[in-house]
Image (cartoon, rainbow, N blue to C red; front, side):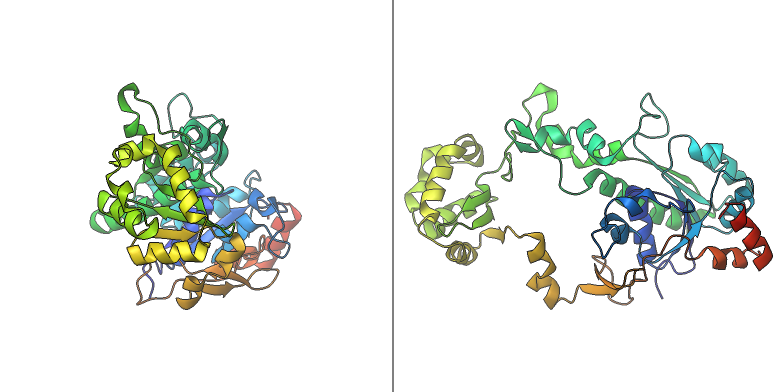
Length: 392
């Protein structure tokens, strides 16, 4: 038995934020019915063709779902959508601003009919305010939230390499839906959840925002190094490889000087006597560290760091991650089906050991349309007529 077995989710979703949210719900056993435009589907299906001809984004965020092809602009679609929502526990949507309300899917309209329904609206900027109707994509929210101002190198701001704003919004939607289901179990009533990509991302910006409070200077752009803790970041070894290391306190700084650099006198060097001083003098300290590491291979540096109890990591490529020995040892990769054959998928992080997550196939566009309509009482003749009319 899974935690969300018996929970039905209807989702009008595209791109990443909402699909990532609902995939987490499906992992826990929820039945997720994904409504897609006939012939085209979720536009994330067309982002690339890297997974045996399928989109990497879509494969990542859409396993274990059912795909219903339905043109919401067709008059017959309203009856089908109404029947689906009537039997749903949760409705999720990240359509363009105002689109759900125009379709009669706003919480105010639905809650009177279905008081137990949970409606989760995911948008760029929220349900009101001057930015409500502004289009929002991941990179734009990374910029608007200030993330780009603290990421990258001097003179070269950089975006995150993955869809961090979408992921943040998707995870807040997921966790709030779980909370709403718990609350409904106590009160018997559903609720509305309003998730903004901007607010999700700004919550994650809490430390740099507080660091720069009252007009103080923001964290400096520092590439792959930490902006306010030093040494914390990448350092080259003598064999041309890179070692990532991080010191968190003065005890570790002393051990680093003694056992890794083998220069114990640095531990009492006034230039480096606190984290703030080391951060201010990072260029001078970097020269010392690079010179010491130049005599060692990356493996030797890591061995010294491990023996000293200093946190470190390899700077892995994506190929390295696919073959990561820790994931292999913990059997974290499993296969899921797709229209193009089986592909590996990471088991969801952090699940209890007494149930297995759903790891069902990634649906082809409209794969479950006929089955869902039959479940709603449509016979073959009506289904054929809907298909002929372009409704499905």
